[in-house]
Image 1: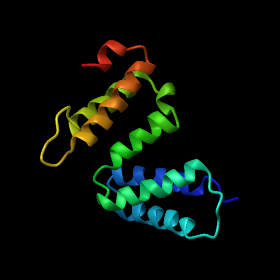
Image 2 (image 1 turned 90 degrees about the vertical axis):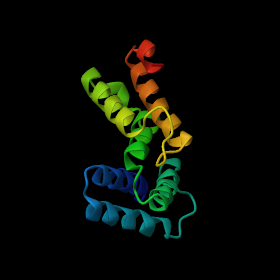
Image 3 (image 1 turned 135 degrees about the vertical axis):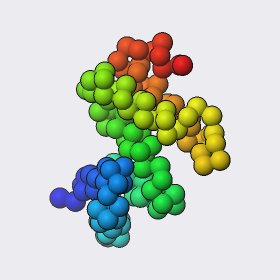
Image 4 (image 1 turned 90 degrees about the horizontal axis):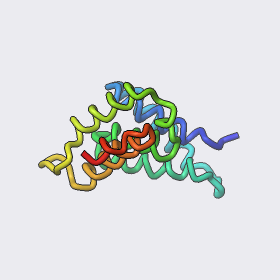
Length: 134
């Protein structure tokens, strides 16, 4: 009954944050927190990941919601396998714009590397590996 609710709520929070809807994102984060407080010991991996994502979101005040969302879509849910190439290219461009290959004063090497991994995997999935290493 409770499985997947924290996971879906966290994805919703990330989407709201990326879309500039901070109040809606906060509502979803509160829902995730309420589930984490429940007396349940056997949460599924997707839900324990959501609890961890919520803590990361709070630590960086949601500044890296796009990166968290892309990592979930690409590596956990594998959604990029079914995205059109034009959508992949648009998302890669957005990631590249917000997370350039080199760290800046606001971005760590970790952020840049994670974004590069998302871009590379999406392009690889679409047979564009030669572009994945640019």
